[in-house]
Length: 146
Image (tube, rainbow, N blue to C red; front, side, top):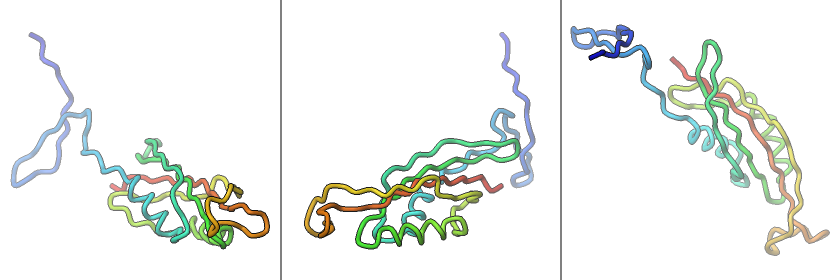
């Protein structure tokens, strides 16, 4: 019978005894911050904003682990362009509060102004009978805070 051998690594002592864990995963995984990032972006964007799309994928460098978040935020309403511009200008300096994670970078990748067919009279621009909105595509990088 052959026994599988794993390198062992020491973990800080707990109540006077040393714990040992397999080298394959030397620390516990962190909670996924994607939901909190998306919620805080939506809160910063204001009441006229909604999330059109949100995806997340793992990211790593030589020294950091994290995730790349791509979020599309839709601004609609009478002042959609002004609200989108104010949000885009404030995003790079925004403070996020995500336990166990740090937002390393937040920026607007693309900006789209759209005109859609109006769904009701409240959303209709009287001059052209169409509803306008602004769509911002965001890229946010989070890294795990050790």
